[in-house]
Amino acid sequence: MPSSQTPSIAGTAIDPTALRPPLDDAEIVRIAPSDLYAKLEALRAEGFSMLLDIGGVDYLGREPRFDVVYHLLALPTVAATVAEIGKPRRLRLLVGVPAEETVLPSAISLWPSADWAEREIYDLFGITFTGHPDLRRIQLPYDWVGHPLRKDYPLRGPGREATPRPPFALKSNVPAGTPPSGKVAAALQKQIARARGQDVPAETDGEKK
Amino acid sequence: MEMMPGQFMLGKLDDVARWAQSSSVWPLTMGLACCAIEMMSVTNSTYDIARFGSEVFRASPRQADLMIVSGRVAQKMAPIIKRLYDQMADPKWVISMGACASSGGVFDNYAIVQGVDTVVPVDVYVPGCPPTPDGLLYAVNLIQQQIRQGGRGGIFARA
Image 1 (tube, rainbow over the protein chains, first blue to last red):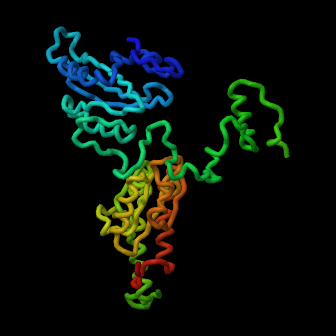
Image 2: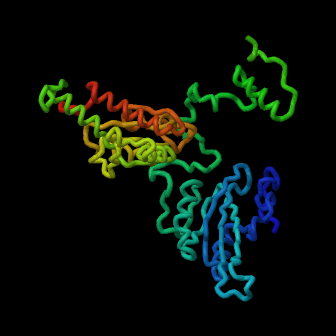
Image 3: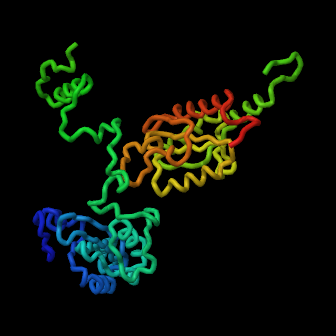
């Protein structure tokens, strides 16, 4: 199903429905936030008895910025044929959430399992769910500021982002693509080259006495 | 201490107390991450921490002398570790086991405390990711050594 909310930036490359074929037998449906609750209600009535999980994705730079993903499962109550036994239906419901209005209706009245899942989305993405009776943080401490799974949240935390990394943390000090130096690195490169069947480079500085 | 030609020994009371104390450093049952697997394996027959009297992992901080911080410390876990440390009776010791507990390790991010020594005072750091059980045993030995050589502990122990 083509997306009704075409991302304006970077085209469809970061739209998962365009990027990936449906996994296993799950159908992927994209829907607008205003239609969400009615759709969920309809799906619940249709037989999707389990809400497995709710996920969140931050496509920073895309419009709408967030995706909230509902993973639904319908267990057949009575199997019509033998082949149908053990073949549940799966559905993945994608909802685009704009950064200006990060509010969705809570699904907790339809599936109680939405409780912690929605708290997690609120905790890590800052998307609130109206109608949730107890929308607290669930993974981070209650007094935490910010929502760390947002792509613009500083990786090392707001307090430490300005401080320079310690000199021993070479892993992060060396810019990507810097050629390795030193005797060990030269020996390693030689080994890699040999393993790839390439000509072993002539004596490098690292190996000279 | 010196051996007398009967069935008794003479020694300073403090030395005896230190000998007893260093031979029964009881760790707190507290595993934080993968280092805890190595910590558990020091109790098995291959490494056998019972040789040093530390096999009694206590489930209550009130009965424990040694806190082994075995793994990364999440920001949310830090106040809990501090509280457990405060609940342990003096004198008490702390081993920071592995790279994560000592410095944050590879987890240079918002969620992990960059070194547990910002939360509780650490006596011995064990390097490694994870350290071998031998490394942890050596750390316990170092603490025993400290106690016997007049560090914290003995009958004059105070906070």
